[in-house]
Image 1 (cartoon, rainbow, N blue to C red):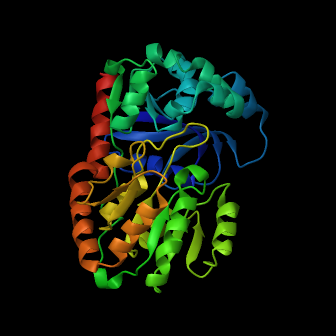
Image 2: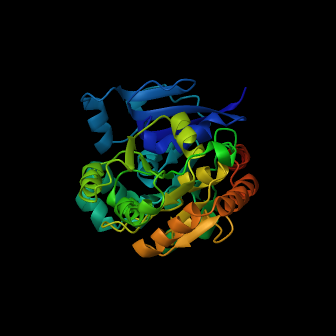
Length: 373
């Protein structure tokens, strides 16, 4: 019988965290069990153990936020072999549970948990942010391994005082079967961006850059996949620029629909910038998934995004927040189907060699086996 890994999250499932589901789906040697504070919807093919189902209030969930422990699940976690918490915040909450069960704890850091300042976490992170800010240092002595999703993030963690021997750099990867390459003649001339609708994702700059070039390419559209608190601001900007017919807000979509939109597009863009709270993009999986679909990718020179694109080989790396440079890169690629195909094919090969989801998950399971041996 396979070993059981308890995957700890706050809320599940979330469209913005589908990479966690994809990783769990491709496990072969470990059986994933999600134990979460709040289950938002059914999750087919996964065993989910929630403190609370649906979005209604729960006293038990609120008490857990202040007094974390395995008590919230009773004996339901008794047969786990290890815990894997995603995000440093959930890692802190998993600490007393792993200790009570006497099993190893692995924590994956994804970005904001290493880049947002402690003061910002205390002020704006709610109860969880405060608990994390006060207890993050405990992970150094209690976690068996801390996974970081990029070399950029590893440097951030070292700067926070985490010892190098505790850190393991590991990319999650993209599913090469879901993001398959379709013939160029079957694609449209759309520019796609898969990201949360927040200021730090550079959506405003992307809309402005697209406005500078779209008149040259009447058939091109900008398709924004994802949702978030700043969507209304971006919608207003599109209206002011008279681009309502050219910019499509797709909203949050199931992963299979995202893959279909990406595969039929011409170019993918992820133009993140440093957030007002200091947050930085640690990796940018949507850039990797676009390369898997054979698209040239444009990213900003920001955080770990430069690890997802080989400049002039799989796409372009543009200076952060530089609207004119982004517009020039868009025009260059929209103008040349041959260049899009060349860069896109190189991108597919890049992902096959370095970011294959199934291979990356097998490497994760090697990490699991090491900590429980």
